[in-house]
Image (cartoon, rainbow, N blue to C red; front, side, top):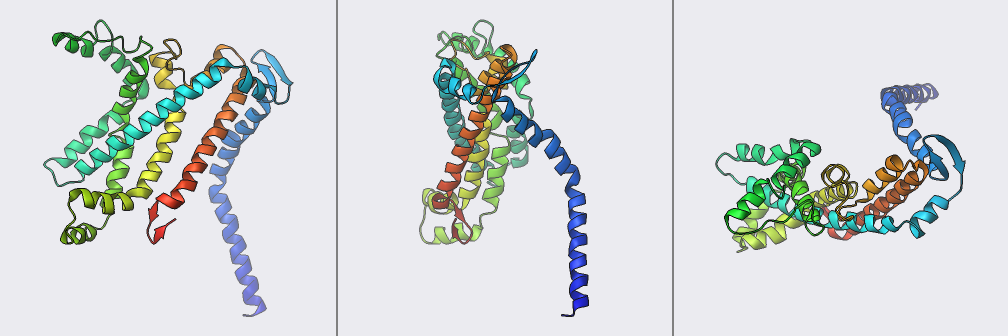
Length: 306
């Protein structure tokens, strides 16, 4: 290749690089100004004692020490959030997969059924909480009214420490089981070659064997994707508890992000709230990293495990 041709190719590459940078520059500027900048500033605030009416005072890692050693609600919030995340992710993914398996069949009015199950996910979470707050009301609620008709005294769903968390499970799962995760599972199921099911059937595999040895292995990338999204969403839950229970009764639904919110806006401890947020960020990164490490041994991609 001549020197002239090399120079021409180099100039073309530089031009393409500049054009590509110009195309992404609106997003890049928005990311730097609206995402990365505030994140770095919150990291600085986490090292200060800062309220809305006072300037930040640098105190080093004292906020982190206080959170880990003195904040009695820190572990309570972590425990409640972890419990909520485990139940909603496991039950939610199981329910979404079951619906996806059902709606992937050639049933009558399948499209209508898919729309019917997907509709709750379109309802804003605040509206869902108000709706279910009326349904679960201990005195005038529909659910307790139906229970009284069969001689059962219904509990105070959102007012009892023992029933508040299960009530939030109901609200959360109602809006998520038939939502985006179900659609993703359906897409994953439709990507499995039908020839594999036919071959397994010829080999004498029953429905359960085909599900276990064909469906699940080939669906593991989709399951992994839904687990990651579901876990992050469940760990960052706020609105459902803030609107429905305010974290009560007796801290029964006191989630971690609600703790951050209360410290930052109710107590005006912005620096401490920033420290709590960064601790939570590290926790989510660690859990996500563990999931990615486990997927190397459990997730079947085309061409083998990855």
